[in-house]
Image (cartoon, rainbow, N blue to C red; front, side, top):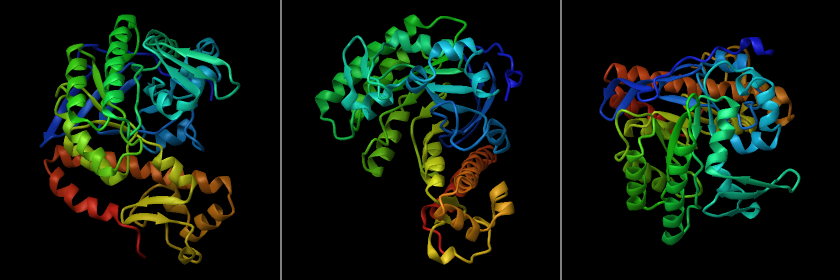
Length: 384
């Protein structure tokens, strides 16, 4: 797609980019305003790490109901590089996506690429995983990269610790992340993306509370909770997420990073979170695991060999309207690219429909009853 599809940037009120339109308990239906349009929340962001959601075009994403996507600053800075993206009109034009874009700062790579990096108070030194060259990320540099990309929402550089990290290491990482947040704000100039702070603190509720309160005092336009889904038990994820959200301001968007399964997204919305991203719908789709209204379905199982039903009879996506379980099983076992595309299409449609259903339940003040009826169905393995 050429650059003509990219929409013009719009003025966004920096002090109040988020409006809560309806409340049902702690669950919120809101609207997040960005330079490239508004995002109704709850919202799920498909992961476009390299500037693409694997297997799908921007047109596909629009048809699935996607309002905002997530890309990664670290990976795009390495390849193709900020100079290339900037010269070609910014990330929206480069990837042919005219909706809002949020970029992660590279903080997760501090965790995931631990053997290839060194963390100091100044920033993070990475050994480039592509060619071995050195890359130095600083809080100021990360803000500059995201601004030059032209994205709508930028994340501060933070230090994400492993799930089993001892208290002392987690405390040091939280203090360093707070100092980096200060520096990020100082480097943040208008016009530029909305800049979100990121709460760290591992599994320690008191560190999380302290870090959240310190970030809120800096008056970011939005707040993320990071450092979860990094190997901890699911119960810990839920417990920490529930405790942390209590310290985030009610008038700001709340972004829970890197999670999760559909049933858990319902729980997180019930806690008061608004934004989510996760590789599960795309990665699982490529591996033949589909999310359905009756639970998770492993399309590769032998019992689907002659099954002429759609993957989910209650789903209206392109995949379910045109193809059978038997055909998807054949494609997956044959390692055909179309199998990945069709499964990913279904899974992302399922996630986006889930967001719309949650919003409707909040607006009609029926969220708790809807959640109680829906979660048990989603948690089960599909039984024909």
